[in-house]
Image: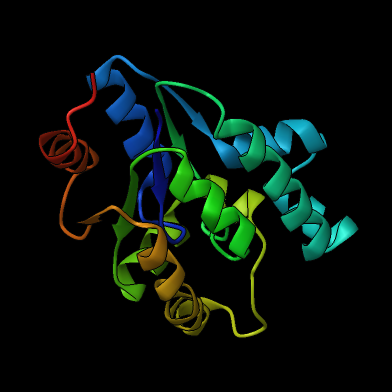
Length: 172
């Protein structure tokens, strides 16, 4: 069994995965980092050099490998839910925690995260808050379809979020 964290950029998936693993004694992995290691370049470079379809293909292959791990907290990329076959894999791998936040909070977190600014491409031509609002609206049904547990991350520290998950989903 694994625990998968889904949600939009800036929801706190990577930070919460690390803390959840620390508090539970499980291992953790960030799917985007694994993807970049396999590609030998950043997500932004994959988008620029190879296009979104190539990125999504690699994302699907990485996901297919990661779901076979055991006792891992897996932080997935925000768009991992876009493909129906990915959603089926996600649901089959163990409890799925959807970390939610509003568009303004996500945008603020994205802007202050150097790794996101350097490694992640803009996903629409709109940029800024309008991009976050648009993508959240598009992806929300897919996040909801996958989630077995939903945790609102607004106004909570990563440690509080991890504790909330552990209280509702004891990991042994």
